[in-house]
Length: 625
Ligand SMILES: Nc1ncnc2c1ncn2[C@@H]1O[C@H](COP(=O)(O)OP(=O)(O)OP(=O)(O)O)[C@@H](O)[C@H]1O
Ligand SMILES: [Mg+2]
Image (tube, rainbow, N blue to C red; front, side, top):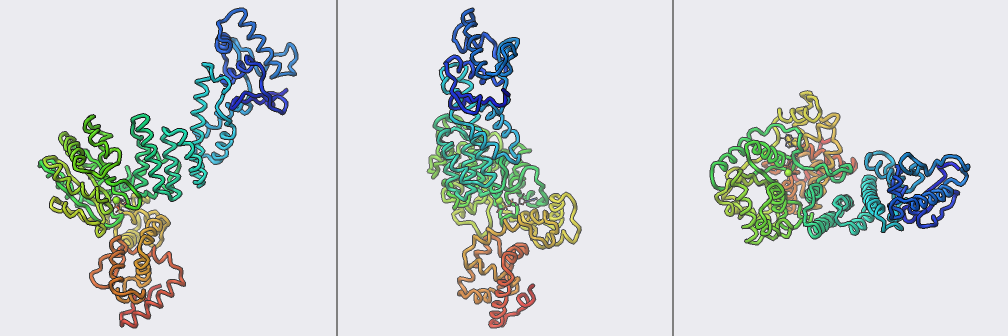
């Protein structure tokens, strides 16, 4: 018989197929001896070891005789057609002992192991999902179950169990990559229930939930994971889970598209190694503010504002990097979108946790700050004091830059702590840098105003900086006409510049990436504001706000409120006059691109009509293409 027709399985129970049907191996020693050789995966098991492990006795004439007779019984089953004097080819004798020689696919655990290890090594290969499904189909319960009491089996069973858990996670990862989110969620829910200490399982579950649009469930999965690690091991989750949580709260776009390895941190704002251009003047002012703090003994507050994508986060990161070279320490806490359902005071939690991971607080401080570290924060007074005490302590050995990003979205708990912070940190060299989009500050930070020593408003990058950024992204300098077109269309907004720089013709194209950035911003507007923006796009900046209102059929107050709403999120800009203007040409292009030509024509006609009625000039409406 050909060895490739022999099949052996030890997952579930030990069975052998030598002629087209599975049979149990009768006889306890026979089974144990065969299973022991399977566990050696083709390698030799020394004779003395086999005797000791299978018979639990030392080597003696009797035990060796027992081994020999069991071996020959097994050989008869494995190779029934072997001629009496022919050498065994399956259960072979080697110089030091015995080994089982079969091709990997003939033995279920060997095949399983090969499939899983290969999958782990080549996680991007096509066919990955199939291979993992094949591996999981082989798994039929723990390996060597009937030998559970034997020492040799214990370690091997455990190793294979671990491999199985790993396979479940690889499989879920492949499902997520293939877009089968429901499949991944179902599998991972059971898997995390069974193995609550597996961080990668929680990470994948949260990622799948997030991609399925279940942001709240994703965060709650991460929290359950953290709770389990805390309760059972007393440890914090590792960086991959923490980063994922932060990215989910920030609704990082890359979570939807990133490959299977979000372990690589997905940071918004300035990525390590990303080009940074211009901003010398603004950086200079922030450095000056830091310099004063470094020499004074009281904290200072600087605010940095500007439209979405203008480069606040990137600039703060740049400042932190440069200050680090001068011995500063820094940390950032982001205020997530309120709709993300983050715990109150999240920015403070993030900031303090980040610092505590680098400079662990002593036991007592840790205990006092525990609610912050555990995210049960409504930040009552003693807790604020504990946090402030820790920060003051840190600032005694290096000045501290605390960045609060996206403060326009700060929740009441964060806002209230922020306004108290300068007072609580009195006497410490701390620069609190608050980043927010103008017009979006939800109020409540007014009390900070008295402490603000520097206010920087970011506007578009200069022409040379735009050219520099396009060159950095494209790897080649744009021709002058293209550079001008990019600067004009984007108003120097680096987010748009970067996206546009990737287009074949940045003067006229509207890349998908840019549409993806702009669409949600328009979609998030109230219906009236969205309709107004659509009409303003068709009108091309040459129509009075009253005409837009009339075309919408709403009263003046509603029209003004809609204009303000669109201005607050940086779609329209302050124009000085009554003709709303787009903050950037590119935003108008994106809005227009989403309107069908029929719709554009209809809106144009309506606007023309209302302009005539109002006696307004018709330049924009009449000539717009
Ligand atoms: N000076 C710069 N040089 C090069 N790239 C920049 C610069 N400023 C910003 N960018 C890039 O532009 C994009 C948007 O910047 P950033 O995230 O800092 O904007 P933001 O003002 O924080 O926006 P938001 O209000 O949405 O948080 C990022 O990809 C960033 O790397
Ligand atoms: Mg930002």
